[in-house]
Image 1 (cartoon, rainbow, N blue to C red):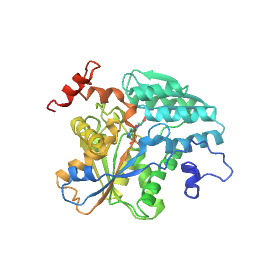
Image 2: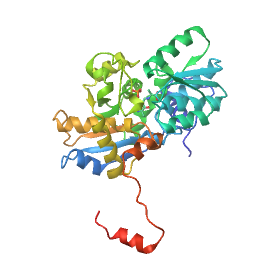
Image 3: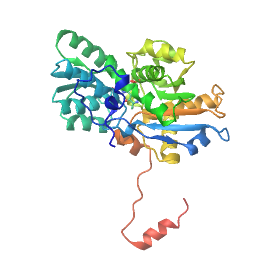
Image 4: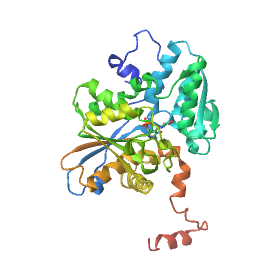
Length: 352
Ligand code: F0G
């Protein structure tokens, strides 16, 4: 049977009326990939059971589609004609796709020059009106929150509770894929803090055990770690370049209730984890998505997490093709050879 999308699959756990028409791209049902080589790199000989929840395989290439199917379904149900969001790129691409499918006008506000190419390309392709703000994501979010007070436009950022309703299905899937139990550790990047809040709701509601949450923030954009707003957040992981997360308090409560940890990791550590994912496991993600892995690596190295016999899930939030520029910049350029066999054989025999 084909997968019907997260609302239809988990309808009994979601507050939609049976009669509400669903706007879906058959999102969800992403693979939970066992990562033994990465586990061995992070914790040699410890018997860590590490899994990767590859959310980059959603229809628009990020986890945002889980929440967006719910937010757009509800917006249509309430009669909205126009939707808006502030975004570092993935929310925008997801909103644009689901709005297109529902026939809605879609406006997205993005921070000028700080949105990865694949995200911009997708927004434009889906026909969203892309507005580039001379400011940060936080500035853009403040603007759209004000705008929707004055105009009949549906806000589809994760301040919208329907976003969390859809996003929490990620927790249901992980439990189902692990054979009916939650992992010991659930590791993920934290930006605007919607996803971590949603996962915690999901694990609680599903009632098959609770993990401890490990949230990773980029060192230059770590308001939860420092306990204060970061006025000028900076990180190469542009998806999580956020200084004043909307779900700040809810994320802290979830971290606290789970006995969790929130930590800052440097851009260098994020890139190192990003590289390990691709080279040890063949899983290509955008840099921000490696932040949960970097956080796990750091906490194991510091002795804060004992990996022995533990099960850990790292949520990989976005596909690597979202940010092709970073991938190319981080690698040596391709080898160039004349189109002849001798040259190719010469190359083959060379020391690598
Ligand atoms: N990973 C990726 C790839 C993201 O795009 C985001 C957030 C996060 C992690 C963090 O999730 O905000 O729920 O804590 N991206 C938002 C956007 C801000 O506009 O696309 P969060």
